[in-house]
Image 1 (cartoon, helix red, strand yellow):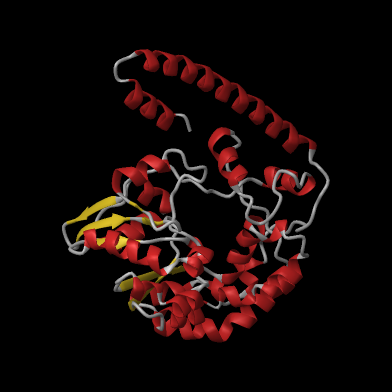
Image 2 (cartoon, helix red, strand yellow; image 1 turned 45 degrees about the vertical axis):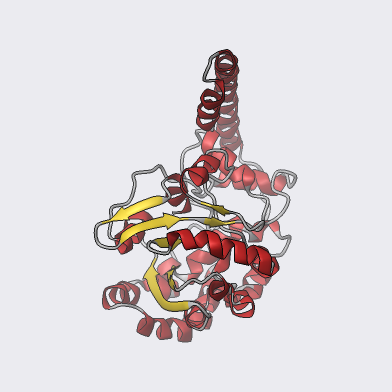
Length: 343
């Protein structure tokens, strides 16, 4: 979703007027419009978010005042802010009163998904690279998926006047843009889960994925290697599945009362929230390191060689075009356009 917003940050809605996706930067700068989409062309992740939790905590009064002044340009319109790390950090928005300091009156949109699936995805996004065993990591992170608690906490954040909760659909873009009263852009999906063959290599060669936040390589591989898509390895055994569902039962029952009628129906009818047996057909794999699978490694090696050859071809073409652009009277703008294409 952040990729779509970063690529086209100005959104016009016949129903709700104009929306502007903007990114708050820790130096007190506001990225918006063409400047934001231009910087997005060079982003390793393929999107530009606002600063993370540390940026919220460390934002000085002077920089907050500067951001408030910059946000004032959009007083007659709506702005959209986003950072995936904010969801469970409602506490720092209470402590810093940042939304109030920026003069914002906010409508929070929260997407929720069944907790068990979240842990399997989050294991490969963060947990596998922490050095902790799966069961210990799940236990240490149980509070992160108590969605009702998260919703209630955001309702109490100064500067928040409304919280909308949505059950995560198979494609988030049409759902979110429908809230804005407009159609979603047609974009290729990014930040898709890497196939197990790649994730297993990361486990065996830890220099490729040094820690839970060292994810730039994920985006590079997704962009440049034609490795196809396969389900992320399922590593949550039935015993842990049941403990996750049991520990979230009361909170999920509370969620029923926080959802609009259409969302409530989807939520109540989805066994993934309520029944451990709904996961019994999953092909369970070891969460920790496993030996290489020759066929998988061979296919990945072939894809890597093809990707390298393709990048080399693009690089040489770019060098040639840059040289021609330098000689032209429109060198500066031409070079900028060329660089935006080299992704």
